[in-house]
Amino acid sequence: STPNGPVAQGDLDRQIADTSPRIFLHQLHLHGDADATLLYTTFTDEPLGAAEATALRQGVGELTGRRCR
Image 1: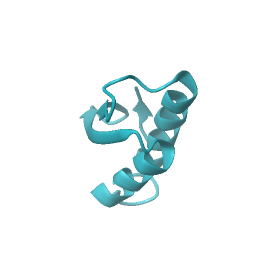
Image 2 (image 1 turned 135 degrees about the vertical axis):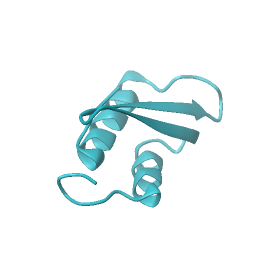
Image 3 (image 1 turned 90 degrees about the vertical axis):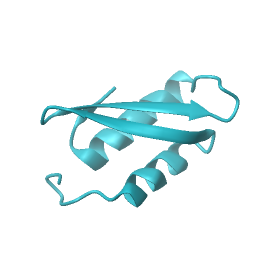
């Protein structure tokens, strides 16, 4: 649960797809009460660009209420 209520897997899927359609596999690892790590694989196996990565971190952070890296 977040400050804005529960987050469903579909919410996370939508956030990621809206940020970058190049991601096809992702996994969110929670650390304690405030942090998270988002692991992902792209279709091309190349990392996201800096702007996409920043947008992804911020979007997932806002959705989950956690610091995302």
